Length: 173
Image (tube, rainbow, N blue to C red; front, side):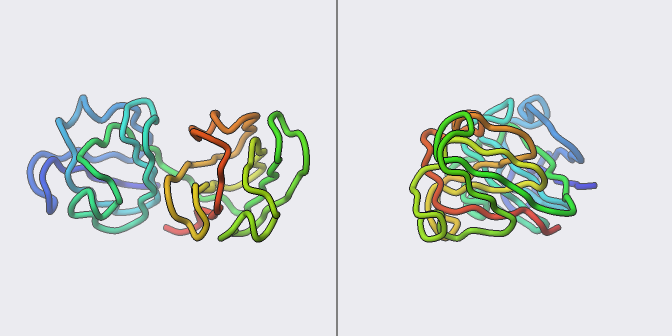
């Protein structure tokens, strides 16, 4: 179970909205979001409704302004609770629709290039666990939530291109 609280003003002031699960459109509850408190669980927040736009991973803690979650403005329009699985298994592919070289992953990967000697991941099949794809090595740049399921092309996880520099498991509360 998770709990996240969104506040209209910095430092946890003003109107607020509490959420314990997925919410596809926060704008019907708040006009803006300038600070966030995650009391339990892990969440992805999204800049646009329906889980689109830039994504930011938040775990338990306090985020007194948007710079603490790496946002550049107060545009938070959706959130998704990330359940914690028991294990992590992912299969990566260098081509669309599970083609080309196949690579198995069960742990964090700070550099896809160093580990697999490729720059791009075009598709993947997540058997178990929730993961974050980062555009650059060492968990830098844009991030994308990858949940269990099949992703036949990078656009299905919201990627603008197939560039994946690093991959991290979501494992902590």
